[in-house]
Image (cartoon, rainbow, N blue to C red; front, side):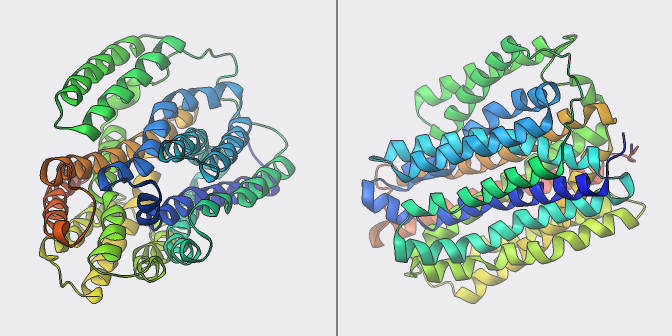
Length: 460
């Protein structure tokens, strides 16, 4: 089905605005973690839930939303996701205790899952194949623009107006995105309008993710180990329920295509290796570095600015080169080099060193992200773009959650009950950071090998 230029532009613009919002909010909140901890008297382990609650909720709802978008219409789900995010922002802004902040972040995660599972899918459906890499590159660029603006804006506003009002900044953006899509794209995209949502599968998947991720985030406690094991058992039950199921949430046959499954694994490894970087740097710069939130934000803007500038460049380059595996493979390797610089951090690490770290990782990640996503979306038939888009999002968000889980695990093991940051715990915090990034570098190495040997792409 062909779409008019106006419809194409409306979809691209709406997806770019929504792609800007979520990372903007997340990076702004990273610079508010210290103040949130002071306001509610919580330590670094609990503060990790500010990000983890968002990620957990988004991962739980992503697979059902990927299927629901094909049934109810991708435009309707896109608008629904934005409305849910608005509700979550108001809940977090008005929080009377720390766990109400976590609830608000979880609601935002539900809304974000509805958005991200259809955004890339809508772009793939509406934009012609010869321009697909470019459009995905621009959408990814807006994601990195949000990451770029977030630290500086969040740090400054946190010092001026406090962390609560930061949640409301994205509300006008959400409303603009809704108006753009409703006005410019009159129809809808329903890949499976007669399909049915597999409620049993959705339940099994939700329980599997909740239990397993709760286990990962709270290791090494005994109940966390039990939770992880039981969660993995439910995951096996979910996978078995999907095989041969005409209303399956997840099209398991897609994973027989090694280009698809290898690219998804590379996505998981990339985000699993790199996501905790902003969490650690926000705490490091404001505690050991003794910077204000504004100053830390200005330093942390380096990496996303690099990604913002270079991502569309590599997106366009993907459309032009024949071997589309080269860019994401090199990107993953460069990211591993950037992460390895954390192993030399100490109490006197200079700001210049921090900036070099972010320059290298930003370059590597911009080389990886859009080309890898283009490979995933182009390796499946059009009728499965919704499922593929959902899987990209699941791999990304699950990787992020595992990255935070690694951080929380070593905080618990090494810092224990002394996880409030102060001069007496700075040495322990550095030990946590270094061991966490050793694990992340190993994940990056695995992702590089996976990316290199995923086979010759068969593009649709």
